[in-house]
Image (cartoon, rainbow, N blue to C red; front, side, top):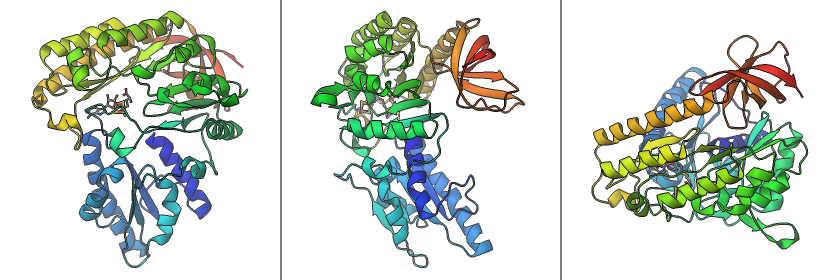
Length: 436
Ligand code: SAM
Ligand code: SF4
């Protein structure tokens, strides 16, 4: 979602004379878009700010020009005043619900004196109306935020505090953005939300719609070929959406459905509101409708109170699901969340051992999933050139990176059938069967 927000900031600033620069050395404006989900990401913000201070000082000394520094995203939301105090060279702090105001905030920065601008409100007028106006360049694949915030309050998570209450963007605004993306050459859209499958809104004829209906509506856009969504919550995985995986050929056979833990005790302490068995039942249902679907997930290792027995239950759930790919993280204490004051925090060594065990298992499952595609023909969307001569990188319906070679110079954005010849941990290689 930060990637999407960064693209939107670029779009917003273009009419004001800014253009994207790969390097900060001679940038008039540096925007650091931050993440607050784990402590490591917060530490990174402050170390990046130190690096940026050095860059802007060097620029000032050489050219006499002063760079404006803005901090955006969830660290800005949670620690705005702290950032200003610890990093006085920062001019602007802007939260994820207020970045549509970035051009105004920049205009207010005094080029000589250092006046500070903080904007971390949750405005009542949705920002989407403002950020949708001027969509600039995208590749063949783009993100589209349809839902933000969260009302579920898992005890480990900062999202409800930094991104605010659950908000579903209206249907017309989403369709409008999707069509704009198609007009500039996008062929694959990934719908985004902290709980994307909690999306609900009034549909056509004023009916209540969920994500499944929205996807079916988007699929009517002819040039849009691949549709994805992330991240889903197990409780919002309704039958309509599950059926879309079977019936809607444009919806990719890939589901990212975080489990977090395989232990009912830990799930209860996390306030996930489902048991391991209920999670497995959802996966079973999804596979009943869409047998070849690639299942992905998230796991938190070492949540307070997690015992060896709880950890083994997580390993057992992973074995039962057999993931195509999944993410796992050490529990990170987040200020202000209930989990941070729970007793029985797990020590770092234990967390490291458990994480290693989980990741080894997930790695072996991912490799096995990838190997199953050898000798099959897979349609990929060509995303970009690779590092090697004549090499391209595409994405498979199962969300795998696929490398192939072609002398054709203009394949980016097209769909190509590849015969898969080799499979690795994180990628596949293939040969062209046909272009279409
Ligand atoms: N809403 C999705 C759900 O509930 O399944 C997940 C979205 S959350 C923004 C992304 C992932 O970050 C979570 O699934 C979780 O695994 C991880 N995460 C969140 N808070 C964390 C924490 N305090 N420590 C470690 N990982 C965390
Ligand atoms: Fe965070 Fe997801 Fe839980 Fe919401 S449902 S609090 S986003 S982990």
